[in-house]
Length: 339
Length: 283
Image 1 (tube, rainbow over the protein chains, first blue to last red):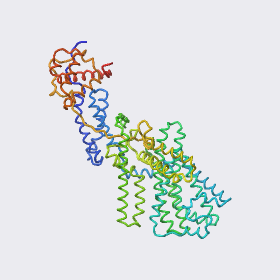
Image 2: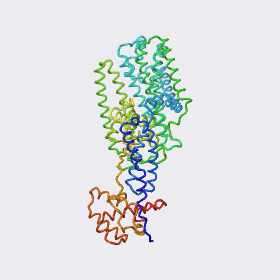
Image 3: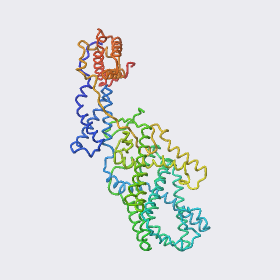
Image 4: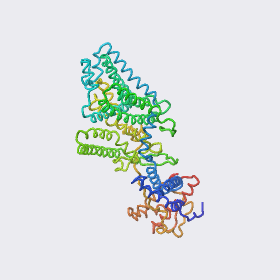
């Protein structure tokens, strides 16, 4: 094989010379965007950024296949990576993201998890019914179902008067502390319900069941003294968001557990990813529900002592709660949230 | 350490990121824990000083809750995938599917943090808080499970924790980009040797790997990290192997090597355009 090779420089040299200016321009913009956010760029720079990025991506694709200068390819890899990070972080405004998460994604995800919500509700109800039936036979079961620390003396040995008193008492100053304590305590339990879903959902189901037992025992105790109407009036205003949120968090945990045990036609990793993203949005919505319940429980319940007003408040809470979950995010279409 | 993570961006071009090592992620995490601790202390002091114990404490409880559960998620949403600790170590969270980082992914990966860290701690130290009065075998089972979750990063191939699996995210290092001068584009430094054009046969010996080694040697020579004698050895070896005539390689090795690099690269790149790739001299 003879014949002299042309004396021209490698093609990649010309390739680099022609495009270098664009890369350096992108480099400068990306540096600023990574340091101070996209918001720090002016309108013209924002307009240039995607154009430069696509041009540089094209350079990268070409360089990977035609250039034999590893330093050049490595530079383009790094530059494109930096530009990707600057441009495809979470690009939406935080306020918009929060509004969308609560008003659109949360109710949609709750409806997507309706099987688990029904299951979660059923486990709680079964717990309550079993506790009720057992206490019908032997009231002493109460101690097994209700933690004495939580009951605070409200047990079968207390007089009817002593049981009635806490329903209308309270109003003792430290309402805000009480409300925030309730919120933190309950929201923590909700997150735990979700977290325990990773043990195949079994501890979640147990937690829901014992919660139901406690509820049933409580209801039976007050019913046996003819105070059921008063107790329900006391319980419902905050109970709707609070018990609702516990049931939803339980559903989130069960959903994750189900993905682990029975991923269906997906791989385990895919199923877990999909379930985890859906369930975590439900939990985030529930934290807001717990906050609302904390305010109602810590403040309104102590201040409003009239049964009629309490039932009216319960009705109001029920309306927005079910309206939010059943109607929220319908109509407006956007791309599917979970892949 | 040098593991790379490849994702396909929305434009359809694969991008490669250096994956963050476990040590870096742990360091970022402990820094964040430190920030949380300081934040809590400061919050308590400020609120109690401003509003007194009565009004300050409930606010502190809520602040404590938000910091404990949402510190990571809120920062990752606000700072495009970086918490203060990650920023310090130049790490970012990205979505494995290559699309933007969604709030769903951020919340998912951070809510699970609770399962990986706090639940194992509680299950191991005070199991009755999670399980109630549970029998010993159930406790042992739960302890084992909690431990599994915690050591997951040591078990998975990419060192991902459960939160990253659930959120579909990975932690990567922000690549740093700097473009060095091209050894084949230094006309002032390396005027092509007058009668030094190479024949096609002379350029048919070496492949991409040797070319890259040569480029590296030239770069090191220019930075003063390689001796002239190294270049002499390489130049005469190459000249002998390809049958290059004359004493150019022996008298001016840098000039010969630059010229050879330039021509060899041009030749290989020309072949590459026709889809012929020569990885190394062994092919």
